[in-house]
Length: 430
Picture 1 (tube, one colour):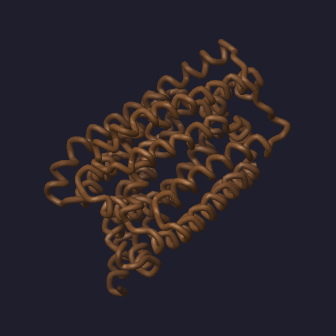
Picture 2 (cartoon, one colour; picture 1 turned 90 degrees about the horizontal axis):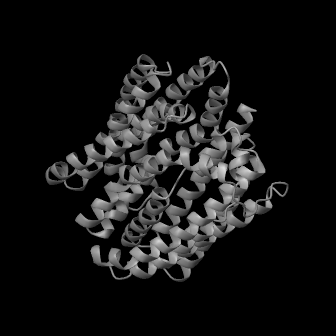
């Protein structure tokens, strides 16, 4: 079961990213960097409102003992729909102030239209989350891939006909609509309906109060670099930075997907037992750390020549940001598994505190580093800030007896050596 689920999660994610990157290569030849910069900012805003209203409904279903009960699932879906409607109005309300703050009039209309993606996503079926809890991930992966492909087809076709930012907006809306529709069709035996169970709602909100804080802080910790950069530099440079950031995040997204869909449910099941046995969790985590850190080291060492082979010279400066951000990704990979253990053990407070510490570090470091190194300093501030999350996550799992600092340090040292050797070797090739 675990191997099959891992195959679907990792295989589906890798295939999805290959499709995404292929579409990005096409779109960079049809659209100017400024379009990607503006869309990056809009995406940050929409995702930010989503994170700031996230009470961990999906995590509650996975973690709670009653997560498979119809009353619990239907109450969760009702709350999810209400959240989607609230997000729609919140995004609409901030559209005008955003356009004024960033001195970009077209932001108003773009943000207003993108608000519909949040409204649509609010109606996603909870069947996808329940399938995640049970590690039945084949259909969920297929659903996401089909939606992604259709979204990209719309983007590319629109950009070919009319190379404007509305190609990206239309693709995002179509993708959201497909996920919402297919989520209700792909699991016909799990039907959701509007329902309110006070006890279930209280349990979701009780668990979610820390998740809400964590999600809000996660938004600022993960997106402050682009929000700050969009105010300091032209949008074309924001677009180039965003493409570098997208590539740098690939390894971390793979691991976060695996830990969220595999390790977190597995750890939650372990902690629900009367006498939890952590041995298996430690074994899985050690394998994860070695594979992920060495994998990122190889990725970091070879990505610059590969990137220059794939993209036009206009976008080559993105590799400078990419390599700096990858240092933060290195740290984030270690934190991802510890964070899953803290959540599974019912102590999301450490995730919240860690994210808050990360934001403080970024806020302290960003402007001195920007003044010294310009936009590269913003990327450096992001990477340095990841140390805050890791430190607090380590403190949390120490109480669970799941820290493995020696393995972490050994993997970091070996990974850094591999990265350095490949990077300098690649410089001789270019």
